[in-house]
Length: 276
Image (cartoon, rainbow, N blue to C red):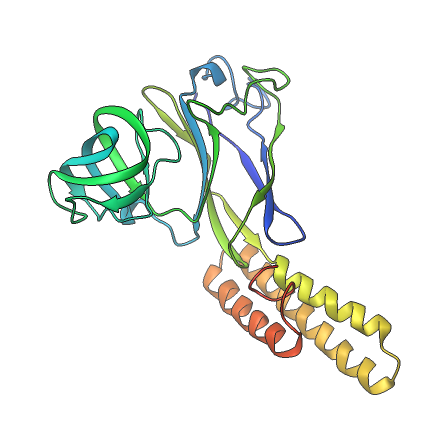
């Protein structure tokens, strides 16, 4: 038996904010054997916890790995293993503070033994395997100064709770992989493979057309707007159906067509694929 963290990420209707809900729930031998508490870990064992958002094509194979240390704001890639460290990557590993990010190259080429890199958080990390990850969005649940588990009902085996509200989201409509990672001093626990489909901007485009249709007065305009609303509904249904079937390439292709159509027929701003 082992903990399996569970998370939901919900986009707000303004398209630039998200809410995060922690849904792991307390252990129950019958209904929730992978939840918080004995025989699994509870929140007192958690050293760090993050929710990272990646493109749906994300694979750990594209990350950078090295056995290294962090002293102050200098990360040293003592023995490089694979991939390439670059500015903007987040660093993860046992003892590494969540939110640690490479902000500058010092002597590192990205793949050389002994390469050094400046990070944004001062800390002391002894030799361990450190991974560089290119993350689109990152939300911190626990680090040395943040602990979202405390104060929750049932903690240290909390029931589901709202973790973060109205967090900034800067990504366009699309399919994203969400990875909820919980680290103890020796083990990392992650959620089952999870993908989220966000269509906020496309749906807002359709809604604007519906409003225009309601306000239209002449038959020609009504017919034109009705055809446009119908087309947007076909796009949305097609995207959702392809996503549900796991055909992400098709879903993304239809989404691109829908976004282009929206930009052609609607005065952009809030309601096209660039957000609000």
